[in-house]
Image 1 (cartoon, rainbow, N blue to C red):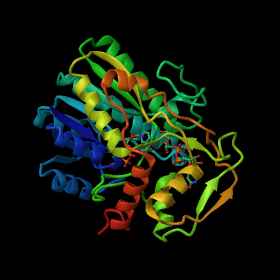
Image 2 (cartoon, rainbow, N blue to C red; image 1 turned 180 degrees about the vertical axis):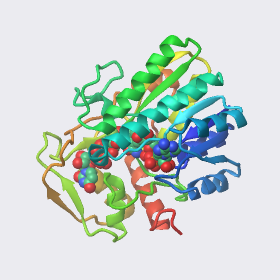
Image 3 (cartoon, rainbow, N blue to C red; image 1 turned 135 degrees about the horizontal axis):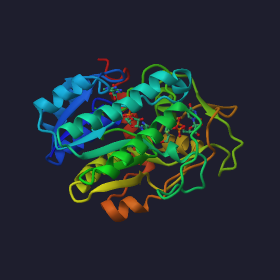
Image 4 (cartoon, rainbow, N blue to C red; image 1 turned 45 degrees about the vertical axis):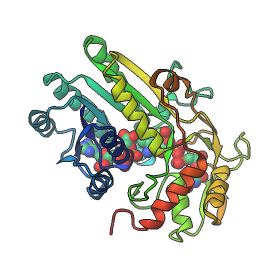
Length: 337
Ligand code: NAD
Ligand code: UFG
């Protein structure tokens, strides 16, 4: 298939482009580079020996998206082109709602015009809100407490409504848990701008000496050791899940919803200790107050994706810790040479 990967230069997108190319698909990327660099795509081309067609384009811009569809024979779309910082979304709600919702609408509009009807969407475990664990696809969604989460709920709803009236459409809503790690080569990985919000990139920057110590946000949660518990998934497993999903849309119509997680919860301190063990390093940390908006514990019920997609996360926490550090070590300034 020839896949348009919106946001393909970013963290999850670049790994997915690599797996798509390796699986024999053609890749067209549209990215406005607001949170990425084309260097990631150059490295994917070098790793795979294959070419990517790249458009520097904002997918909220209908004219720009129309141009891509009129120049390329697109069979399906994977939409990663979102803004993703939860705290920033509280500060800048208009920017977040505009970018994340209008991008989905614009892609749908242009796809409809060109008779393209396969859509894979980057959703998030955040749509479950503070539900019972494990999170299961059949659960009613609860409020997410921030504009970022609401943009995911809204995009899911838009895609469901579009598929409901267009029986030829097939949509996969992929609810990711916590992606970490990098391609095993260490050539592509996560390149956060400024101070990382997320745990793993912060840990790798402490390991490299760029930051003094990790701030652990709370150790008084009702969890195994008091620190927050998440379902960390290797970004390569996640990327492979996307390829299975887009291929599944060739066989099935309608809306398919899948959790992409491992099904296992890991606490902040468990992750820190796994990182230390996997890499033979010490990560200094200090415990602080809980971070506003954090949930104590969540992880996936990952059985539906296994049953229906034949996909299961295979890589271990040790793999994730080793690959995250391998990327950071080789690229201390990210893609900035
Ligand atoms: P990322 O920021 O690395 O990648 C997003 C890419 O989209 C970037 O290259 C950015 O430049 C591009 N982009 C953003 N808005 C755009 C627009 N309007 N037009 C064109 N390009 C645009 O983030 P990521 O971690 O790879 O996340 C990808 C998707 O997965 C996002 O939608 C995110 O919300 C979702 N997601 C991420 C996580 C996570 O923890 N990383 C968890 C759940 C869901
Ligand atoms: N944490 C720390 N110190 C840090 C960073 C994080 O202790 O410096 C803790 C958090 O309190 C939490 C855990 O590490 O308990 C994981 O935090 P992350 O920020 O890495 O991830 P979140 O689960 O908070 O959120 C991420 C994405 C969201 C997405 C969600 C579910 O940032 O966009 O996963 O997919 F919605």
